[in-house]
Image (tube, rainbow, N blue to C red; front, side, top):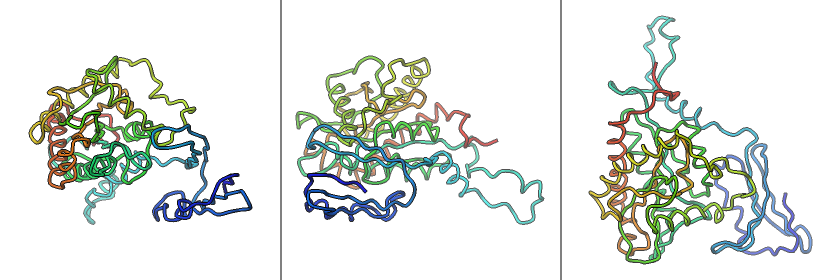
Length: 353
């Protein structure tokens, strides 16, 4: 229970009970009401024990002062274990007449002949929840478009032999930049692809772009502006900036990250070449900027700007299912080109013996 003095009970609070999905892993019900004169009480019925964190945020963007309550599980779920379990579910069943020695062998994910192991691709739909991202003139929200394209891309990747996709978010909820990077590293991702559909100051800006991390500075003014805008997403979404972020606060990029950036540029080049087949390119090369979500030191990472949602013509295309399909397929083609030349590392727990 959370009691707040001096707060009014308005229509938004009356609708709280409808904000919790049935499949929410932690919250069963959420409701609010007047506890006593001048005091508002918010009650959360929990499904399991949690570690709460409470902090305040100063006004930013369209939000005023906010009180944020984050609920963390006492025992955090292990996405790597879930991925391995998911892979194991598609393993073929052994014949009933096989010997005990054969039956004792550990099962492996189903991989077609010629494929050494599953390549894990983490797809990151930009923004989400209270952070809608960029807004189009026709009312489109970046968070919706990125999720739709990312889901299409995941479905395509999962159909490929030896490839498996993991979404950082599969719903309309906020996810910090730190959490996105964490998810990729916890599943030992081979590649990380963040999907966006951003806006620029001028409505005539158009075209697709691909970004990799810059060690020192962005390669263009637009890249600087976009990176600064994307990195502010944590403040919009409500992240406790008093908690030290070991990735975003990292100032020394070691040799491992230098090599990772090199491979990120190679991946970006492959994807950019495919995007140029279906859309105008904003820049003919892979750009580099200090996007916080790309700062994993050991996972090649790119950020794909599918198109400018601030451009009315491109906004219409981004909402077209056929174009979304083409966009997802172009990204997949770029990923496949990269993996054909640089196959997955052998250290993954999904590697076959």
